[in-house]
Image 1: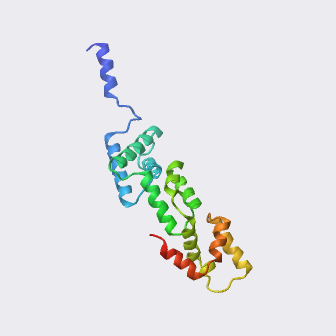
Image 2 (image 1 turned 60 degrees about the vertical axis):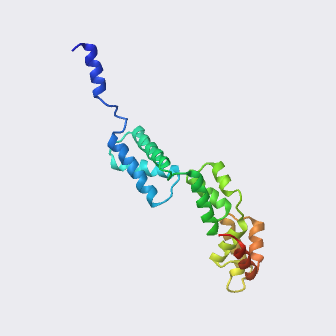
Image 3 (image 1 turned 30 degrees about the horizontal axis):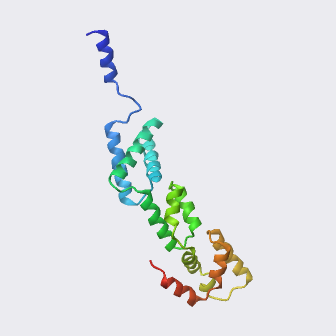
Length: 192
């Protein structure tokens, strides 16, 4: 065997240590399928979860290998049509609004989940904060849903609670000034 052939043979025999092995790539796909089967995730959530688990599972794994495994999990999720940030933003924002979250709070939550600003903007485009503010007040027993007449201290507490949850001053004043019948009627007119 010549020296040139030997060198060529040796380079083929030794795989790149940063390149994940086929069984690691299969693990990444299985991990993605398991996680996406349990709940809806954004791409960044899946990437972070698979990266975290890979570091635990494979001791001493190189960062480049972790990144390759996470990229494979995201690719597999997209290929299976189980990973779609646009749909994720739409569903999560609608659900959050129905539970009494403000547009501002929803936008912050989606940003923390790794959803891009333009996707968040599109998901919140047609959303109105008034029904969400009424639902929030109903959950907390604020304003029209208060059991007893509140004093000024109670009203300030309610206003600060709504403001901390992302509702603007004009909107929270409007909700707190509603009667119970007005608030309930408004919610009945809203689509689910």
